Amino acid sequence: MNRYHLLHVTEFVYDGPVSESYNEVRLRPMHDDNQSCLSFRLSTVPASPAFSYRDALGNWVHQVNVLPVHSKLRVQAESVVLTHDATATTSFMLLSELEQRQEELQEEFYDMLAASKYVPHLPALSPLIAEAEARCDGTVVGFARRASLLIHERFQYVKGATHVNSSISDSLQLGAGVCQDFAHLLLGGLRKRDIPTRNVAG
Image 1 (spheres, helix red, strand yellow):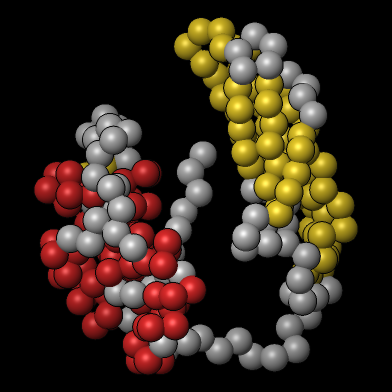
Image 2 (image 1 turned 90 degrees about the horizontal axis):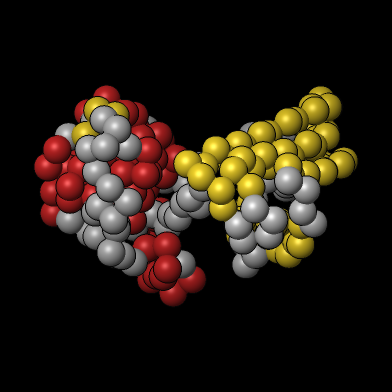
């Protein structure tokens, strides 16, 4: 068993004074068969109380509403986690097995498979999907890793290349984008390959 002390800090520096800043974070480590979260503390500057709940996937969500006027916000999460020794070899689902479960996955994870405004199911994603499948080990996780690597290799980070309302079609045409675009490209490729996915921004 290994014990880890984790410190995660996010800092926002605004162009001017802001008030009524509403934030949600998912920073508390999971408590499951692989690890135990021994302690967790969330703090903000300016100080504000946090309200917590668990989402539909079992993640802890903390809401922080900072009402006083401020020009900077610091969110700090401190955790102590104990990892447990693995008792079994991890096995990964094959892409062929995924295909056999399409109907079940569509019913259970529709929101994570459906096309959306920012992540449409574009034909232009097909070459990326085909190459990721050809170059992976045949597992779902191997496909996801290969698709992520291809996006990293093929797309250039260019600040200002896209804007907050851009679709992945913009990045595909430009061969460039920012973090949000790359996350959306990966979501688009995985969903088009029938792998349920989502991201959390912020």
